[in-house]
Image (cartoon, rainbow, N blue to C red):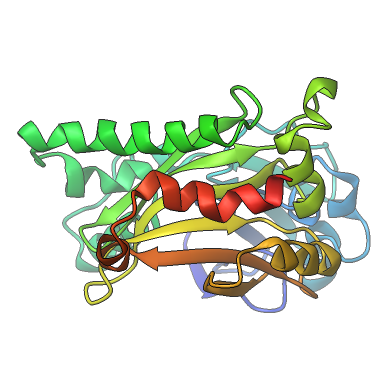
Length: 287
């Protein structure tokens, strides 16, 4: 069908496609390395209740045939079947297949999705890259981070690599600290960190290396994924007085998540090791 499209308005979803005769509507919710909130997820009750995307979409497009597409969610969904809205899950690979690269506008969109971090679309950045002897630096960086995790005596195997490369001046390489539900971890450093941060989901924090622009260069960085205003205050009190703490508004609103960063060149001036710095920032929150 031919269709017009519009960017996100007051209705839930990131993109709205409307058939030329107005009888059909397709609302697309896009996810790039981000979690699907309950109100966005058609398999959750919250989607169909007041404040949920399903209710908003149905109210806005009443009387039309409605499709709701979740594009790029990390896990496979089992949407609730509801006669009011047809829900569909698609993956970024579905968009990549048969992509019209020769069309200028489509080529720009492809580049934008690559810059935003869609793995399949970044292949054009990375396909012909060569690291050669420099490949050992990636292994060394991982070794530094894993060593810091072990020195902190955090829960065994409750971390995972979290790495994104968008371009030479926009990337990160780190370890995500995961929530532990093991009883044996409750009273140890991991449990104390987890209790202090009180994360809203399974991610407690992150630490590693990142670069965001050309001028600033790479940083060492530690994130604390605080889940409330109280947790924000409690973590702040634990951090070293000389730490440069930056507050980042949470998606839920009403409180901030915290991160500490240090330019690599500043650390070199201090004659300290990178692993020592990571440990020095995180350790006060594990006691």
